Length: 394
Image 1 (cartoon, rainbow, N blue to C red):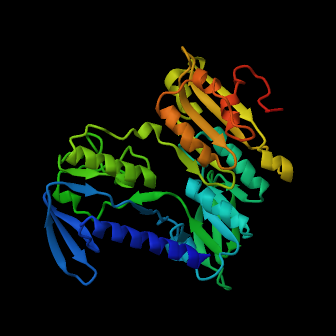
Image 2 (cartoon, helix red, strand yellow; image 1 turned 90 degrees about the horizontal axis):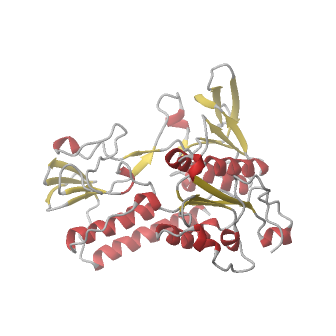
């Protein structure tokens, strides 16, 4: 499997190189940094320096996995999600530290491959996502025997005598201390923007305290001809398709006199946990904070996919909700789906949500039977009503 993954990555990189050549784009395998606002110095692996000047400069350096420098032994004895498919030996019993979507995705597939997996979480899982959905995801993972070590932080990681990792952790209140031995410890505590070595101090580009680039107009920085896209942009969305789309839209503004900007608020995303979670728009908590609980309507449903019926698979966490403003035809401001192939469903529905679809339009649409997606257009029970949201019948 590792070899197949690495071969796939190599093929992607080769494909990008070929496309650049076909478009007559010069590719430099070098590290770049600003000498001044108009000059970039590129240093190749053999130390050769090249000075580049350009009318416009786009920063798209992405992020790198964050390490826990304050935890002794973590840098030397832990791996990141970037390393998981480069291991020479099976990961064995694994501890995943962090509650991010990367943490849950890695823990999910490792447990699914038969490796006993624990997840250590300091506070909540999937911060920034809808917390009702996040709790359903962890409930499902616990039903798969993923062990969640909650309200805990690592204190040190040590090399055990048999080559394993001895991890010591404590509860966040400091009252409880525990230890256990793992074959692999994977850190998934976030990513840091790759901006420290770009020489931005030689420009007027401003950085947030978290190291991300501050923009004043879309992706444009305080220096009008320097732009930032992708994970390094403060206020952006850390997803590869977002960076790609932002780059394409920026190119049309620079070279085709377009005034189009990417709408970062209506970006659909999927967490590829064992039970997929897809979302677009606002979380329920954010909607309540912005509009007030009395001014929103939340339609929700627990449903059972047909394939689960045949295989007798439990569907306790298969759930969806549509968040609407209560006025008029009830504009939809958030859609959340938890279940098999949720990402495939969300791609289509996200177009409608971005176009301003209303609950009236959604509910007037005829569903495709028998599919999970039809449950979205059939959804009719509100949280406000207190009625049982379990779907029964056709």
